[in-house]
Length: 335
Image (tube, rainbow, N blue to C red; front, top):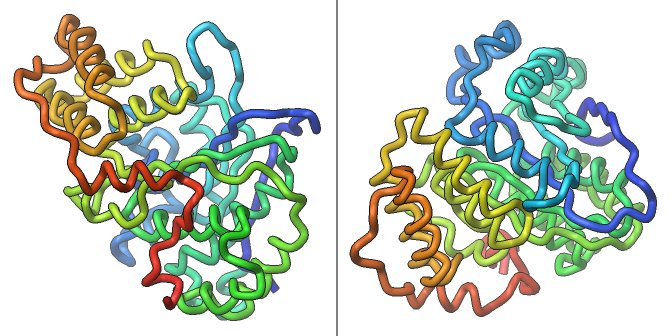
């Protein structure tokens, strides 16, 4: 018996497909969903698409992800995962359409089966749910597809994405996975089902990076132990720059995301601080930072940066480790 999910897939990729695919959280990554109280959870199923509020810059970012790098019409595969009830699929998919976001599938938590099986812990348990959703999605992708994951730090996305990346890469062996999953709050039955799903997968390309929108933590240092596989980002602007640096979106997309955020009342000074912070954390180098600053300050999208920070030695060491290391911090492995 696995964690109850409900999945809809609208596109079958060519078996010979090779390239990037994206899987993104919806709640608190794209939409301002309220899970912080029972009242907020109770209100979720009754909201209309027009009442759903997207987070500044994220709708534009997803459109840029879908388009791919400049000069290409890549129609990048894009899937969404939500802990909202399956009955909300029509509402959320309508919201995606209203925002002009093309997508290829959605996965929701099946609240009805959670109630039916009397496992009420699953309403708030996210690691088992999201791993089940990710592995189900992965089972339908071609071997040549590699994944980029987007989420937030409000629940357990950083840890979940690390465990998932390590499971796919074999850095966490299937024989040790049940212990690690249960250590991190996954029910034993769900842990066994996750390992069974993992064993059934064909070898593939795995996860290249995970980007985490910071909401709970104001300081990216809170997630330094997850680096460099996980990149903490203060909003869509930092995500856009990071994805440009990774070759996933075009350079012009950075300006379009910045422009949308300015129209949503994010100040140019704030965007300048976020740009400088990426240089400080060695996500981009100083030359790229200065180039982006000149381009966007000339359009009044980013305030001029007179004094650039030095690269932080701790983040520089993280970047030097490379993404091939074990992503999951030792404290979550029981080491």
